[in-house]
Image (cartoon, rainbow, N blue to C red; front, top):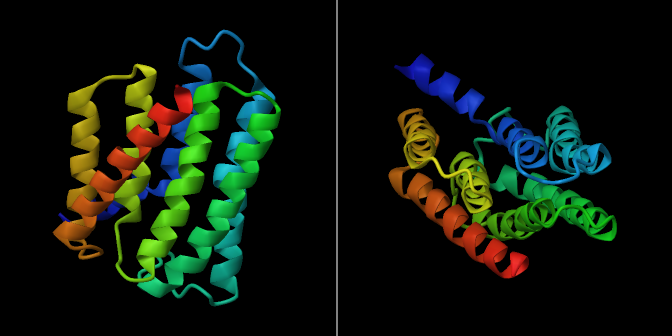
Length: 191
C-alpha cells in the first residue's frame, strides 16, 4: 500500500501536473489559434525554471530532501516560484495570450505567494493545491468530469496522508484553498 501511495504522489506531483494542464488548455480546447510560443512560455516559467531552481537549492543544501519534507524549507522555493509565475504571467499578458492561459498563470502567481505565507506557519499540502487548482481551471474551461477529477483529488490526498507527509486537515485545507481561490480568481480575471 505504501508503494501505491508513493507512486501516486510521484505521478500527481506538482511538477508533472502543471505542464499537463497547460498542454490541455493549449492543445485540447477549442482555442481558435494555438500559439506554440505562448505554450513554451508557460512551460518555461511554470515548470522548467522552478524545477532547475529546485535542483540548485537541493545541491546547495537549502533543501534537505526531494520531497521538501521540512516545512520552513518550502518557503524559499515557493517565493521564487511565485516570482517566476509572475514573470511568465506578465509576458503572456504582453503577448496577449489566450485569456484562460493568462488567468491560470495569474492564479499560480497569487496562490503560490499566499501558500508561501501560509507555509511559514503551517505545512499545507502542495500536492493537493497543485492538483485541485488546475482541475478547477479545467472545470471552468469546460472539462467537467466530476468523477475523474474528484477521484484524482481523493487519491492524491489519501496518498499524502497515508505516507504521513500531511495530516487530514493539511490535505483538506490545501484542496479547499486551491478550489476556492482558483475559482474566484479566474471568475474575476475572466469577466
